[in-house]
Length: 232
Image (tube, rainbow, N blue to C red; front, side, top):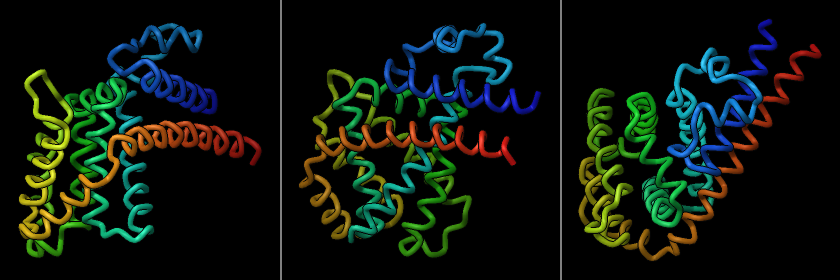
């Protein structure tokens, strides 16, 4: 029974994440996911109590993907500070270019379950990247800072008719985030200038595509590990 439970959970995660990234999180219902799996909504909710709990699985994958993205950018020669600026810039651009991406990020930042995951992950990264500028900060102070920063990020993604242009929002967000972490003004200006010199709209589309592929590969790997464990 446990093995059947495990494979059913993996099937639900694979289908739900695919639908969230194809149709949009807000446009995908528990019933639609259940229909794809040919099970009842009640059966699905035996494994995941709400759509937000399914979203949290995808946000966990996003957090892992972001760590890998920062490593990739730094391996190519950029500083960790530039890598975090690159990540923020491409996330904002992806939200501007894709309604699916925008819906995913906005939903993730407005669900208490997933917002807590984002804040914890980002606080862990901040301790690694900004510690030289905040050498005496405690873990609590990094967590408090990320509470503010998640609000800045949300405001950057959540646009209205009166919102500033993308480059202005990116510049303002990067400056505010680095200011919170005591990054000197000259260094802030340099990183913002470099971020805005990138073809960030195209990069945002590519990062979104990379993330979708990462999710597919992660789900496939989970199935491979599951079936390998059955043979042992």
